[in-house]
View 1: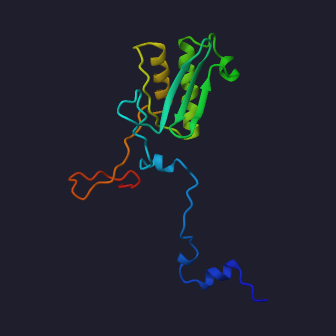
View 2: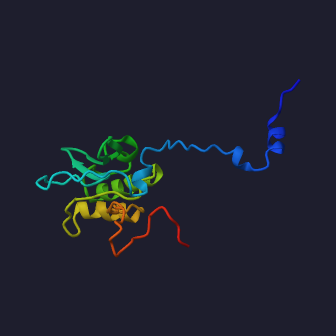
View 3: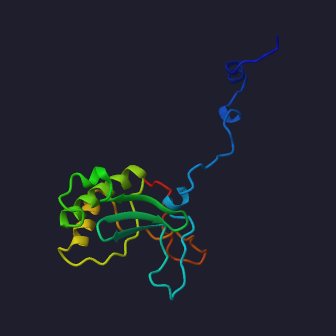
Length: 171
């Protein structure tokens, strides 16, 4: 008899503040990395190659196939594309020639964009007009930036330069 409906509860409240939940649950574990404030491992200065990345591009060449993958510093492999997959292999003449590198780069870039990765660290050394160069150019043409932004560090009170915060929109 004395049940109140949601509509009656809304009418009785003078403001919407009573209806809004004050606690926010972040269900995206990589949100802080996208905001550039998440932990980024520095590694040791003698490490070769260094470990200062959130996501890293790795290109592996086996005896018969190519594999491109994104490796997260903590989670391991998060995304992978290979010329051993039937969907890619059926469109290639050979699984390790220059066209295979270029086509693998296109497929890999598309998967990265669909997954939500638009920036990653890349330390691959490419000879001009070589196979790896064709791969990297096709990945960049697909919309992936092969350089991670630097980590945002809070300005100290005595710093003269105060960079804008990456999560604030100033427009």
